[in-house]
Image (cartoon, rainbow, N blue to C red; front, side, top):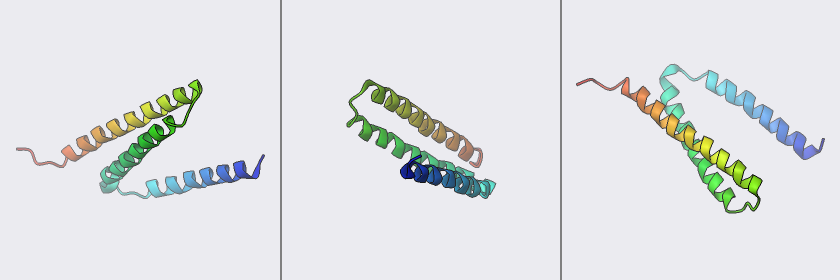
Length: 94
């Protein structure tokens, strides 16, 4: 196993552990802002997919980019729908 691959795997595992610890400590009142932040991150993923699409030249690259764009766009749209639904629970009914 190359040292670069080992470093990448180490960073990935450490990010999983840190992410789990951070998310598990979030109180229920902060879940909506956290989801909005996650939606912004997925928006950045969509921009990244568009930038990568300009540099790919293979059919497999286009297929993988399409799948990445599709899932990122689903996350953005679904996340905003869920966030809107959660915020609606706190609105006063008229």
